[in-house]
Image 1 (tube, rainbow, N blue to C red):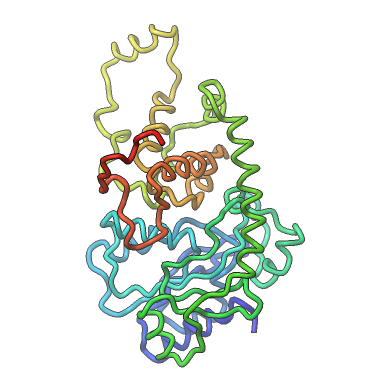
Image 2 (cartoon, helix red, strand yellow):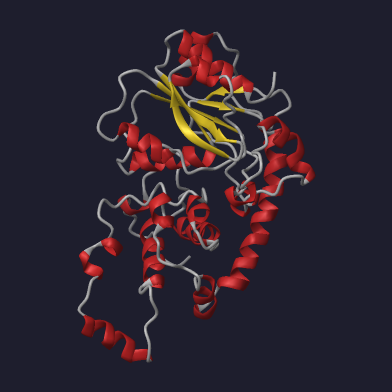
Length: 349
């Protein structure tokens, strides 16, 4: 049985036995495209490959929408990448997901291929991808190359594809009960030999990425150069799972001015670029969501100008989160930094 077929068969059996009402997973819509889908018909799971190396968007956005008005009355199994699971945890803390009747399943993630690199090609099957990724046959998204959150510890169920025996681990009572009902073998503690091996490679890539970003993007001139092609479309904001303001300041009337104001702004430097407020937008967005960024790279995938916004946000947010000794989506119980007060938190050490 192919690696990803384990999750498919598990989903089929859960649907057949009436344990769940539906499955959220990736489903191909074309040879070079796939979407997250809520599937209730077992037959529609026949050609599903939950682990294909494709990132249409962060699935936490879909779960946010499904639970916004009211969570489902019947459980739904959601099969997520670790970065998507991190976003779910963060959105629950931000009171954006009603965390009821969703059973979370994740798998060890080798990474994904940029959508633009798959245009007019075929998304490789997960089995083929896993066998070939270490040989360099497939070029990963830059943010995936340096991802050090490649196994989730917050899901109900985790499929340990890095380990020799590809085990399923139950990480919560919900996960344990679910697997027991399905009569599926599982373990309650995860081995990490395979994880450490993959993680070593990812950490080296992250160090190299951060060194490059520090060299290429530090300083006013470099950051202006990096965002020079930005058209202020706000795609990065729209696709970000943790950018959650119901009314965005940058899309509100607060950004509308009389013509004389634009003339005054232009006269200060002799000219005013259009679209305006590009850097204000990026710096403002970065400032208010850096503590919750999960480095999924949805922003970078959505950028029509191929700006490395995801890599920059990953770098900045990790530095910001380290100040608070926080890691977004790491733990269900860990308080959001902006909700926590420590008298000596920002004192110099």
